[in-house]
Amino acid sequence: MEAHNFTTPCSYSCHFLLFLLTVLLFITTPQICLATTATSSTQTYQTYIKTTCNSTLYAQLCYKSLSPYASQIQTNPQTLCTTALTIALNSAKNTSTMVSNVSKLAGLSSIEVAVIEDCIDNVKGSISELQDSLNEMGQLSGPDVEFRVASVKTWVSAALTDETTCTDGLSAKNVNNAMVKNTISEYILNLAQLTSIALALINGLKY
Image (tube, rainbow, N blue to C red; front, side):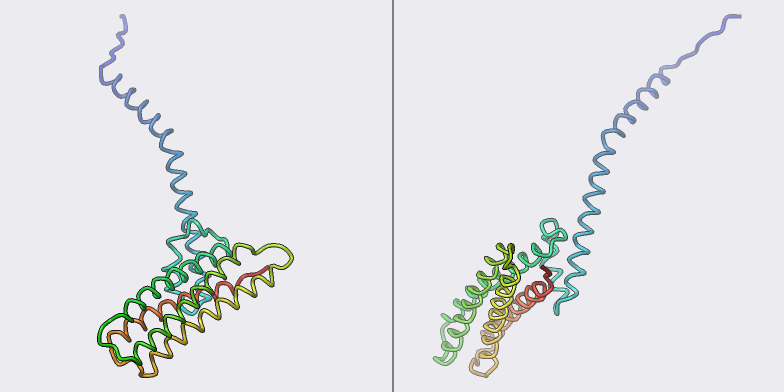
């Protein structure tokens, strides 16, 4: 009795679908691997930042401000410090603009204006010192690297002192306008904390 080969249209469809699934698997597997690797690297970088930030007085602010730059920082201590300085410098510039605008408000007494103008000078000094520090960070190489790191520490410490001096002036009850006092104090406090973070991270550099 002759055997018949019963092949249904479904058999061809199933083989074709299997072929398509195989092709898709080969196409997507490298992408999945790359995505997994990228995710793993990002987590490694963020963990590094979080761990390093624990050495600062303001660990939460440190991680919050630096973690968005994890892919650039990776696990490089010098890049971490440079990024922290850049963030502090940008904050100082924003603070300077804000304090300058506040000094022009109507109704301030001559004493209040004088205190605020002193604060503006302090913040400008901080900007200069942070910029000098940032410039020096780009030259940390050669036999005098330790001297350069010491110079960076000195400038950042001076910037922090300037910022604290501004806060002290506001706290001496020379500014009676609560809104002005609180606004400036809030900006200066944030700036001082960011500067403190940068200094702590720089203190951790080893050469």
